[in-house]
Structure formats: C-alpha cells, structure tokens
Length: 141
Image (cartoon, rainbow, N blue to C red; front, side):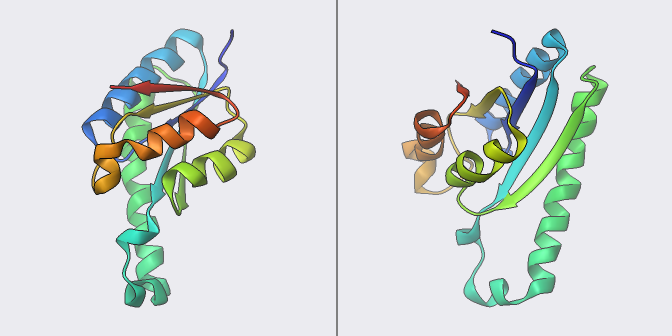
C-alpha cells in the first residue's frame, strides 16, 4: 500500500514526539506529503477566557507558531512537502470528523498517550482515532 499523504498529530508529549519522528522518516522514505496537526483543547480554556476573542486568537497564534518548529524540523530532515494545521476541540473527534475528511490523508500517525489529564492514562484519544478513523492509523509508543 502506498502512503502519499501522512497526517501526524502532535501535542509535545513523549509519545507524540516519537510519532512525529516516525512520521518524518516514513514520509521521507516514501516521498510523501506530511501534514502536522495540533488541536487546541477547549477544556483547557476556562469560560472567561473563551469569551475573550483576543485570548483565543492568541492561543491559536501561539500554537501555529509552535508548529512551525515542527515544520522546519521535518523540512531539515528532508521531507519536501510539509504543512501545518491547528484546530479546536476534542483532539480525537476533531481529527476524525473534521481534519481527515478535509485533508484526505492516507495514513494517520499518533502517539499512544496524551500530554495531560485523565485521558493520558486511558489512551482514549488514540483509541478513539484508531477505532473511528476511516484511514489506516499507526499508534506509536
């Protein structure tokens, strides 16, 4: 099976960083396009912050700027076509229901554990994406 377009989710967790490294190498070996996604989780924002549009735009801007570091790393490693994307919501649902239909990747590569919270211990985001994504999902430990 050929994978021409790879989507990788990043959240700065150790497993996500491993998944990102794996995605870089795999994209390079297959001359594939690499899309890097990070999702701004709504539950990390309190109700007052969510009402402040400048706060939300600032969070998105910070996240987008942070993703450029990932983009440069992938390009320096030899991946020729690298794109970044930010979204807001529950990471698993957002990636499966919005991002995958929009980008139409062939493969999703994700880490097995999230950065924080109860979901980190349950691995619920990775499990959700592996179960419901309409494409192949590789979960990296």
